[in-house]
Image 1 (tube, rainbow over the protein chains, first blue to last red):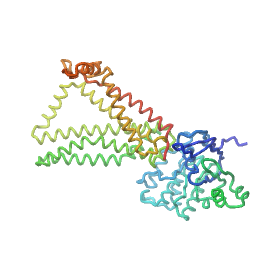
Image 2 (image 1 turned 60 degrees about the vertical axis):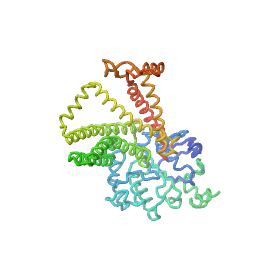
Image 3 (image 1 turned 120 degrees about the vertical axis):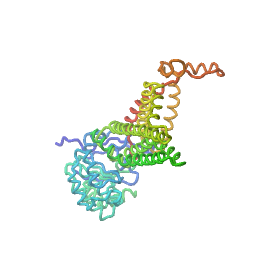
Length: 235
Length: 277
């Protein structure tokens, strides 16, 4: 019997922005050792949920445990969060960014980050300001995935990136993902992530609409996840 | 981790602060060269510019610190800062301590710059540097060294208050209930804090029994008295000669208390109410 607590436990989670609900009684339990796609239409609560799990969003009600901790310093030491924004100073080169991560995260593997930067063929001498959006995204993914975290939270890591780069990014992510960790990746580009996800969670209006393993959902509904998403959200 | 955070603050601000202070000192030095050369008209302009530079160094540094605080806590870089595994109150404390240290450094530059302006302008007027500083020393002797040290302490207290209040107002303004206003929230919070401090400051000057006597043989001594008695006398006899005998200094302990309250509120805000947009 596995005594480890679920990597993510969320019970009756509510969050509203100026009275407008973003999460409305969300319940979710996710175990380690999986890549999970967090999917939903615009405004379904994906980013809000990830921000709460990452500990950068307050004023919610309910119960949240991430890697056995309530969101805070304890969970942040075990959670690697990639937000849907460029969070590093523009003047940083990849080497500066690696040094910054190494100073603050005990689980950060600088060698692994350098390898990923090399894998993505990123220029070492350019500042982030001089890089394209896709290149910056790759630098940030290299940093986030080079932590030996228990939980990885990736918010739209391939949005705004060309299809060829999406494949490279997803390969880079998987290459550095420990099998006993949990990777929760939000996206609306279902087709691109379908080959890599073990399970999916569909959100709608701040609640879980559908959840299951990718194989089960495909078998039960007789269709791909992408087609299922379109069917579910069109109705 | 606190050491790493502090060194990160130094590392991430040194370029902007260095440029700002460097340009200010360069302009100030150039202005003083013009003053020293006694060039007609330009000399007066140079003097005015040098005084302006010396006066503006600390406010400019405070603006740089405020921009850095907002960007690294609640701008896009906040997504890095807020995922560092430390308590929110620790982040607040480190930012504030760094801000205080930099501000004290800027104040030291202001004092040094003021000394340079006095020396160069005295030399240009043919007064002599030693004579100019003797005048300054005599002035200090008149008011008393204790009063001068007290005033220096007041400047320090006010500077610490400004740094803490700025950080607290930005953090409170970035809470989810206000952050739809963007940077407008801390601006409105700053205006509200200013108005509250004006009212409390007036009350403190009247009611807190701590003041400086400014008339009579014991002028310049500290007394356990506020301005309430003088104020009441002025109300009773509005047409009479009612110059105050004491200047209330209650604003100083008020600043200390307000600094403590705002530090507690700001640290709590980062700790429990951080909401990145």
